[in-house]
Image (cartoon, rainbow, N blue to C red; front, top):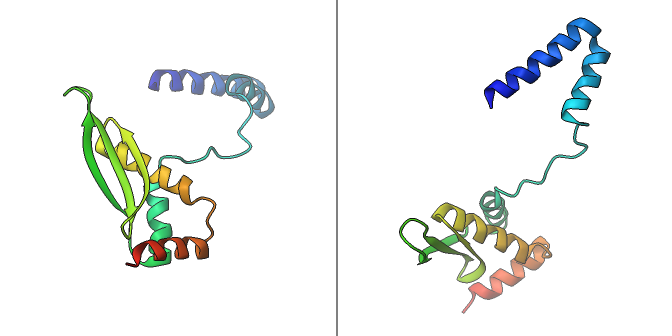
Amino acid sequence: TSSRADLVEALIGAVYVDGGLDAARATVRQVLGAPPTTAPPQTHHAKRVLQERLQRLFGAPPTYDVSLVDGPNHAPVYRAIASFMGKELGRGDAGNKRGATEAAAAAALMAIAGDDDMALREKLAAAGSP
C-alpha cells in the first residue's frame, strides 16, 4: 500500500542521509533483496502473442467462441475456444469471458509452441482446405 511504500522510502532516505550511498544500497538489499537477474515471464498477453503470430503468417486473427458452461449466477464459468481457419487451437475456462479467451489463447500457444512458422503454415493451411 501507499503508506508502506512511504515508510520504506523514508527509511532508505534516512539511511542515505546518515550513512551515504553504500549504506543505502546495503539497506535496500537487506529490505528488498537482491535485484532480479531476469524479467518474469509474461503470461497474461497470450491473446496478443497468438494474434500477432497468426497475423504475421496469414494476415488474419484467430476467432474465439465463448459460452457459459456452468456455475451459479454469482460465480459463472465460461469456456472459450480459440480457432483459426476452422481448426480448434485451444480451449480455456475462467470466471469471466476475458479470462476464458486469454486461457484459450494460452492453450493455443502451448499447442503450437513446437511448430516453426513453416510447419504452422502447413498445419493450418491443410486444416483450412476442404
